[in-house]
Image (tube, rainbow, N blue to C red; front, side, top):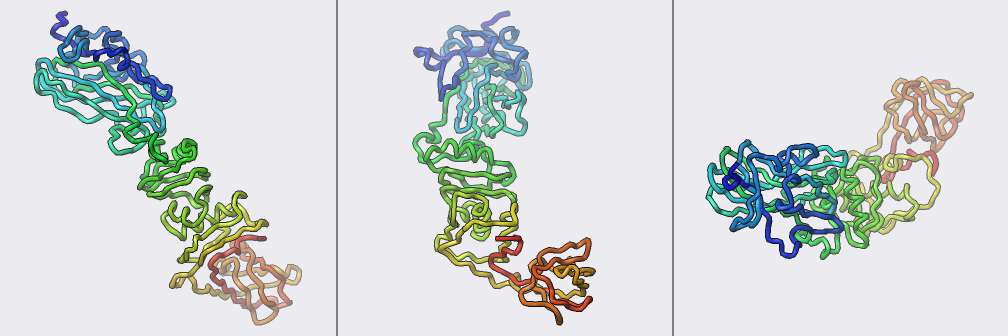
Length: 441
């Protein structure tokens, strides 16, 4: 073969070797130059046992290109001609890598080129659904050196071309040449460097959850990313940028959090903001003071670290009664002192605060004086309703429980020998904080 006609990759000037090996946070990033051998450069995705350029008939080294020094020259013979480093370049949360290569058209047909990649998971599988190439550049002028560049990282930050999320642990990087076949191209050795300084990681007094894989689409579970950012904060603030971040299960955060975006969680999941444990913190976290109060109460009654929840001097307007037991969710008794302080609770002007009133005919027996039976419309009677009747009902008797299938009600106190069958009234008052779901508090 006449190698002078078909050659593709190049090595940049050595400069004492510093360009061929970069260590960032203990990670080796820079691929070896082409001059050290083409067996480490795949014609496919960079995975083991794929064809390399070492034996490719359409590729060879050029020893002394005027622009590149030692480089690789390739004849384009496939619709997408790939070049990938077979080494597994590590991907870490908070680390952003810039992949660069210089390429030029020597002869033949013009094409386009871009940085290409293969995103790898911990299971050594490709991560579908993430971008695995950078911006495209046109190669249509003979001898013109074109620089290809792309930034890859876990987080969706400005300027990141390939956002790989928290599942990525390594990548294979190189270039793609796309378009008609027949062109001859020369390529300088691919360079991978730490671009994290673009995002000022070490100069800021905060860590950004998106650097750790959080995606503010309201769908992707960001719990692991938030936990990783919290661990990395080490006394700094944790920033939640604009967006809606779904957290699928309970989470405790020790760092102080700055919310520009908001979080959403299942109703049963708890968020413990250990440095923002007040209404301001939770209102910012959930984007709503009423929901913030609910989630704050949920944590207050489930965590021993705090004896009170500060409302920060604010007035919270409630659109409906706040069912405290439903908010807590996982317990029906509580025996520790907890305090809401420094604020006001106010109902809005809506019919959500009107009493519910139901009448029903029921049977009573002296053998079970706390139970009413044979109630046709028992499903309409709310637990917590005040019980009234013409005969035999004392003061402050409430519905404690109901069995819809059996058509029965359990009362808080025994009745005082009412008739065996009687029509009763059941009035459910509305409370700002409704504790009726607790058996004991």
